[in-house]
Amino acid sequence: MKNSIISFVFCVILFSCNRKSEDIAFRTDYYEKLNSIEKYYQFINSGELIVDEQWFRKADTFYLYESYFKYLTNCDFHYIQVEGLPIYLTSNELCKDIKYLKLWYKNNKYSMTKKEADSIVLSKIHTK
Image (cartoon, rainbow, N blue to C red; front, side, top):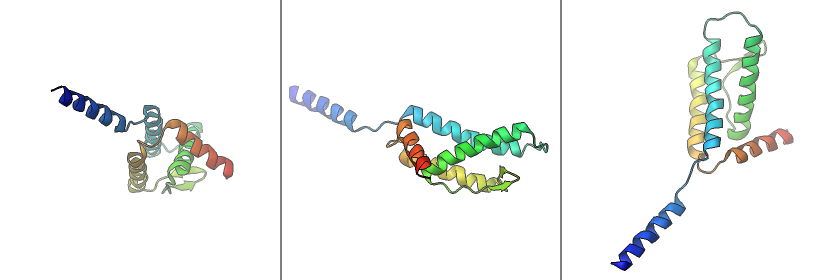
């Protein structure tokens, strides 16, 4: 009986040590950026035809996050630029990018932290 309890405790400890964990700060930051790109698409397709300061602020945020994802994931985004603004011609193009970014996250979530991701992006910015 004593040996089986010791074996059980040993297995629990071994299982706990091998369990992978996800960096919550990385997940939160990654998905905030991803959601911002989706919200930008919704904004530009809202029917608002006046290009004003708000458009350019949102476009600047889009470009910032797009660059982050490009450096981190090597995503080849499917938008075009029209007068300096990023425009997705169809929702299908946006969906390709979102699908790629979600798959990348799924495949890397246990091996990446926010600090590592930021370091990768900064190193690519500085070598550019």
